[in-house]
Image 1 (cartoon, rainbow, N blue to C red):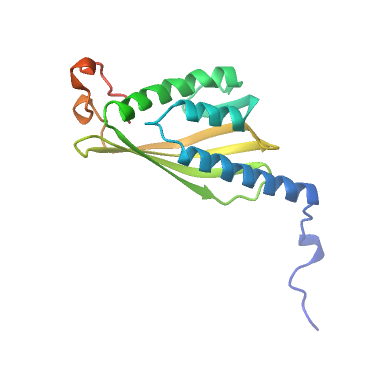
Image 2 (tube, rainbow, N blue to C red):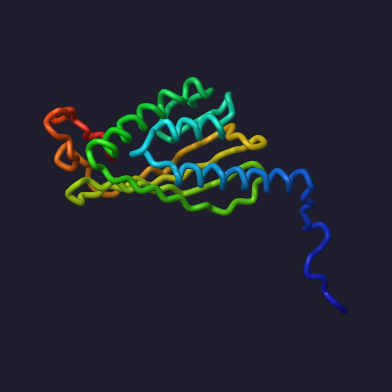
Length: 180
């Protein structure tokens, strides 16, 4: 007698709409991450704001493991983005900071949810380096992010300081110790 390899009660039916939702969220995730990786902070922080506008829902919810409350809505998330993007842009464009971003997809099996690992390397003009690593989970509705959570933030290397940047006399003493 032949033993079946899969018993009927162990099968999980995957409806066509769930399959389409999975494919759709994966494709949107690939497009979003590719846009983020192509954008250059030294050229413009506005590129990142355009990406945010194009890929995130108006009622997006954003959280991070060290925040007490979730941030709800594009209007409330945008100032947080600007507080990160503007100083990075200035340090990259004017002060010579080198910024390298890497992303790795983490396989998942939930329709409309994606996972990825992120890494940003900051290198000062003298070669000193600081790295930030974290993970992100996104939930999608159609082609828009409706929820994003960042967790397990890790810093490798010490903070970069004024000496790691080419500030010149006009910006010296501004105190860009915020990296890492």
